[in-house]
Amino acid sequence: MLEKSQNHLSLEDFDYCLPSECIAQQPLERRSSSKMLVWDPLQSSATEACTRDLQDFLQPGTVLVLNNTKVFPSRFVGRLSNLGKSAKVELFLLGSPFSTPEKSGVCWTHALGKPVRKIVPGAQICFAEGLQATVVEKKEDHTGAPVLSLQWNCAELDLLDWAAKNGQMPLPPYIRRDPTDACLREVDTLRYQTEYAKHQGSVAAPTAGLHFTKGQLEQMRAAGVEIAEVTLHVGAGTFMPVKTSDIAAHFMHEEVYQIPAASWRKVTAAKQQGRRVICVGTTSFRCVESFAKQVVEAGHALESTVDCDRWHKTRLFVFPRSQADRFNPRVVDGLFTNFHQPKSTLFMLVCALIGYTEAQSLYQQALAHDFRFLSYGDACLLSW
Image (cartoon, rainbow, N blue to C red):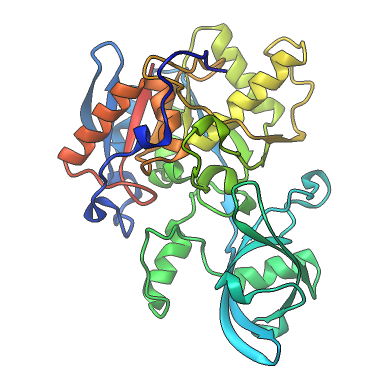
């Protein structure tokens, strides 16, 4: 936890001007050709480089932590049958808070829907190939967002098979798409997914990993960089907006994660030997720091693997309470991440790690030098 101090920051303090033309609408032709700002905490300044040169900034023995979650094509378009009327509707599926990943993976029984006013309990939504969902319940979550509980006319594995053929990648709303553009849809299916994705369960991509190719990772391994894979299924905890002026009152949705024992051994061995641990993306960071917190608070030594390989839940929310506040990670020494939205929990995390004023300066430098922002945009390498 960050220490309390005077002059608390409010939601408005994390706003900054992000022109629409700075938001990347498509990925670059080559994954590793994005620009990168490298933050120097000693000089409080950043130098410009390219993501394909990341290896040059990592010493042999550095542990690079990757989130190997796989994005689920969780946007479904169908027809609503309600009181004898039919209307086009769209569902954005979420991981159920009642799911049991140990047994069956993430269950897709909860969703956001639009137009939300037309979707009422008892309504049926029909999709291609005979897929059908019945709205069991509609209620607001802790943030006031209306969430639907759904019952499907098929088993979970059949639903996943249907989604693979008919579902759409869950692009953020700031990436504008013509739904009839099959070419762009094909691009998104390929590029809104990391090349090392393994375990299906996310409803948004861990976008920092979009910059890497398998070949680049192999080159890093050959140069002595160790790769440690973890899994955090990205859900509402990562992308839901903050709506409270008092950011400490923000409700962080649960996300599930798993850290293999072999990966945790790599991370803790690096800490014991004074080697650096760099997380690729805020989800990897939250995964590692959540587990470290759990291990220590359970009274175990940090290197203990007693709870590894099991699924856990996290609501870790890292933010600075004042301009002077910093978050002191238990394990992580650096973060490779994209540039995030104003007022987002992700931008708040960056502010907590390198400093509020420093993060504002970093982002202004990126804007001044025509960096591309958000999911398909450029990146930065942060140390503290």
